[in-house]
Length: 134
Length: 118
Image (cartoon, rainbow over all chains, first blue to last red; front, side, top):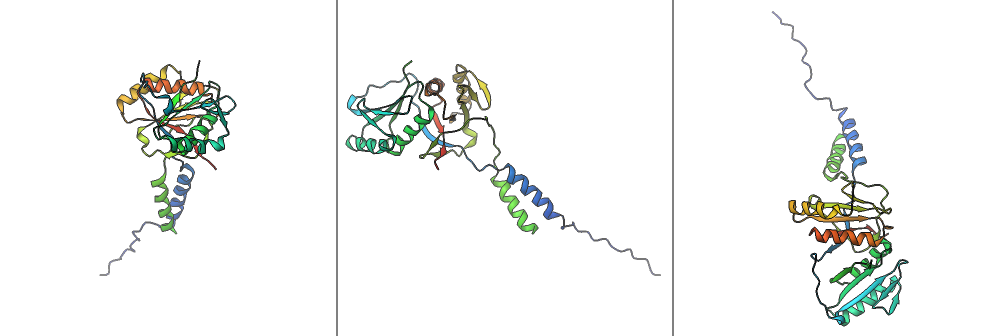
């Protein structure tokens, strides 16, 4: 007796549509991916209520006014481009130098960051941020 | 084909980070000496917009609340880094008062968010 052998169906996952699914997912991740990381200028603030007496000769005051003009130690007005060189010079002369950055109430944040960036680039690691006069 | 597609897929799945908070209309200033923040779990976001509004994460907040909120966060996570995302037009006076609040809250690790120049 011959049994009617049933044709066995092929137990395989259809791979032809796999690429479609994969590409769909790729497109989704491509669209949602953001490569930008949080980045910025790092600072460590001093604890509240702490004020240290510092010798005058160890401080370099930098003022930034509303229009972004920069004044060092109340006497030399320097353009942003020369600020770095100027601070580097002062740092070379006195390694204990603390750079104190003071911006006025209405100084745009952009100018403040530009000056802070230059100070950091000059290699100053002791930076003090003074609050503006009310 | 499917192999390549899956390879790409895995790459994107691994590298994808979803943006957690976004406050529209804030344009960051540009700077050169910037560091990247790696540990996303430790970062808290504080935004200051050009029209002098303050947001914590993505909710509007008052200046006086800042110290309280960040004090709580610092208690929970002592290594909190505050990413201060200020619009480039924001007045420094306000930013300075925010910094004073952060000092009161003892949240001293700070990052002035900026985009890379150029």
